[in-house]
Image (cartoon, rainbow over all chains, first blue to last red; front, top):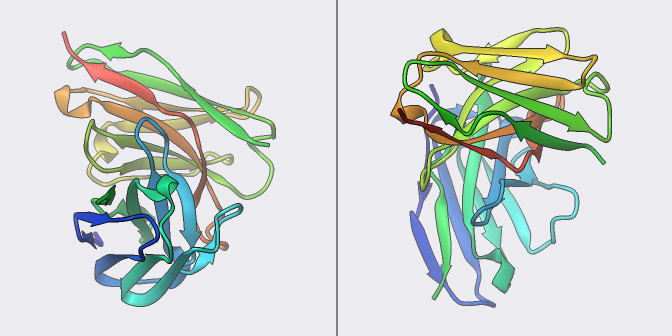
Length: 108
Length: 122
């Protein structure tokens, strides 16, 4: 089983700042199968990034993804008030999906 | 556009079987090469993939739950279902159904239901 470890657990930033979220895998992950999701309280997760770096439909260009192998990053260039939420990375391998434990992005 | 809606009992007794259904609207469950997944989330915790099904009936399950999980599909009703047997309090969670993009694309969960809370308690 591939374990995804996200850091930091909580990130406190102000609107307008840049956010950098990390997702590290216990073994190499196919970039094609690395995704990021945003979840707000009481809502289902929403797909942000797929294939490690492609934005999903309707996702603003301030969201970007990068990385390969075991290290992946989600960057939000300039935080908007609606971006404060929990973010999860997710991978697929060996007919099995796993999620990271999440990073909570909170307003400073 | 395609929407998913979970339904089923909100309360299940310990040792019994949890049964949920996901109804797909706005499109056919058989169109495209999508898989259809179940994912759960205990209160205040992260996401756990339970399993998925293709409209042919082919399934994949989370190894940690495999012995207790059955996912089935009814294309005539545009629905797929989850059964989780021998439940305990640890199975208390919000259960989501989600559309899973084809493996030859990116396997991402692109459309989610709103989720349904299931509590295991006597």
